[in-house]
Length: 180
Image: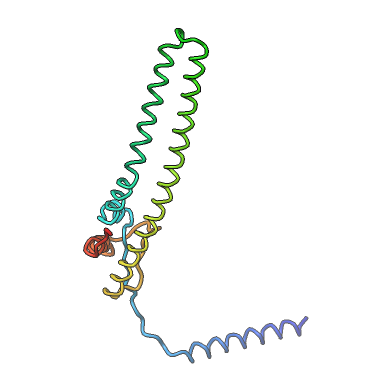
């Protein structure tokens, strides 16, 4: 056991000597101060012309589908109202035809609504990816131009206002022809 203790002490002494040697062998690096900034992505989304123009384009793209769906929904409400008004006065066969028309139209409305929502979500994701790429490119270009080492965009609990470059990024996005 005495042998083990001696070997352990010798190993520790050798490790300490190696660490001391390694610390003296590495030349001292001058201390550098990292330049850090922050971009408030919520503000970029809310205030950027790029995002507002993208939302406008999607709205225009889906306007015809939305109007067609609204017309079908109005027709469905009209048929349901008619059914409710005349349910007691219609013959069984005519009431059955009216109910079948309502059911068919209701399924069509639901199918169209589902298809439109899927298409809208797909287009929104595509637009978001396109805009996200443009925003990140502008942040990187600004960071390089200003000599920044690190720019935070998400997950920041607090950022001092002097670190906030959101206004400059918004200006770059709007000046860079954010809309296509």
